[in-house]
Every structure is written in C-alpha cells, then in structure tokens.
Image 1: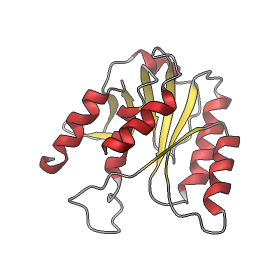
Image 2: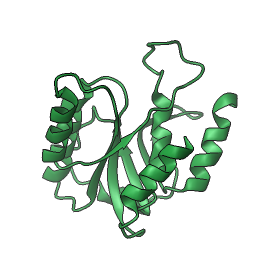
Image 3: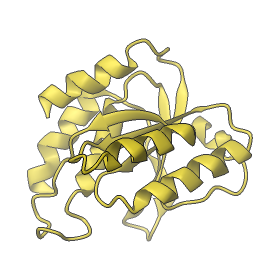
Length: 171
C-alpha cells in the first residue's frame, strides 16, 4: 500500500489542506458507476460548493470501457483519483465485502481537511454541508455497537491510514 500512498498524496498536493469534499469509492462492480453519477447530480442539486472526489479502482480496460466510465464520472462532476483496492483478508473470494477495506484509502486524501464519505448507491435530497462541522469519526449508527460505513465524516491523515492498515489482520 505504500506505493499507492505516494500516488494519492501527489494528486492532492496542490489542494489547500483546509478544503472539504464529498467522496465515494468504486472498488468492485462497474454497476456502481450509474449510482455514483446519480450521487454527484444529487449533491450538485443541493447547492453544495464542495469538491466531489471519487476513488476509482484501476481495472482492465476492455474495449475502452474503463476510459468511457471514467469520462462519464468526470462529466458528472467527480474529480477522479485512481487507486488500488485493499482486500478484506477474512472475506471469501467474490464475496460482497471482499474489497470493503478499500474505503480506508479515504484517509490518504490529505489534500482535504475533512471528507464526507457517501456510498455510491445513495441519493442526497437536501444539502448536508452542515455535517462538515461534525468531528471524525461521525457516522450513521446501525445499532449501539456498530455503525454503517455508508456515511462517514473523516479527517484524512497518513498516520491514521497506517494505523488502520496495521489493524486489518486483527479486525
């Protein structure tokens, strides 16, 4: 993961560290591309002025399909950062959660002070910019003991990313 760390840092090094952004990740199925486009449109429709950042897994380009998807996402308003996935070592091959740890890459987007992460299958109906005022790690609760990682407020940090990566084998 260290070689990827430098790549993400370099793509955001010109950004002001006090900036805020909405982010999503596409790490597995290309079927999430349409959802991410709808998410971008819904965020823009709410009047937000924050950047939209999409972490996109670099997959094989069959007949230019990857390039077309990337262009469609950019046209929708996403700033694309290409990434490599992070596998959940406890997930079965092909399982729905096999690549869920890829979300940890959000902590590598250090060109932003704060990020609101939204799963790419969500639609935002009204402005939620106020959540940028919430501390890390704010998230939607599933129960008293766990949270839904489909909505999170995070503060990117290479240090936090490294700690989270070290915890993968024991989580």
